[in-house]
Image (cartoon, rainbow, N blue to C red):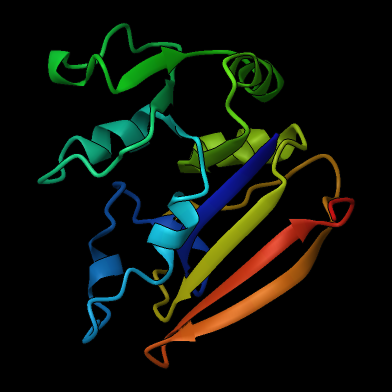
Length: 178
């Protein structure tokens, strides 16, 4: 089983504004209409795991952008909108419990998304690979990707790509991973 984080941050490490806004992600010119490697990445995962706030943000988008199953981690959400019943399941538990439950269902490559969920998985040492795209903006405040952990987590740099001369995407693998 491999858990992945694939996310964009501002130069100063924020994934969203204070109110959860991500409009700034779309302010970078994209003349080629590139997906910056997202389609290749997502073609290799089995499912998405996201937090409730991320799910609520996704529900505001014009279309549903997920072909693979989505698991929403929440202790307060009881049900999803009916039109997503066959696409989304609600789960709760520690990252270790979530990983075990998904492995029992046959999932091997899990995409972890959402600030708090990523932080919980990092805190429990349950992130194997991170692909982080730096967007050339300083937000100054907002929702951080990383918060304090009780231990250091070592990663190795695998690759870096630059898109449109502005976005820097770096891929990191846990130091104990091959």
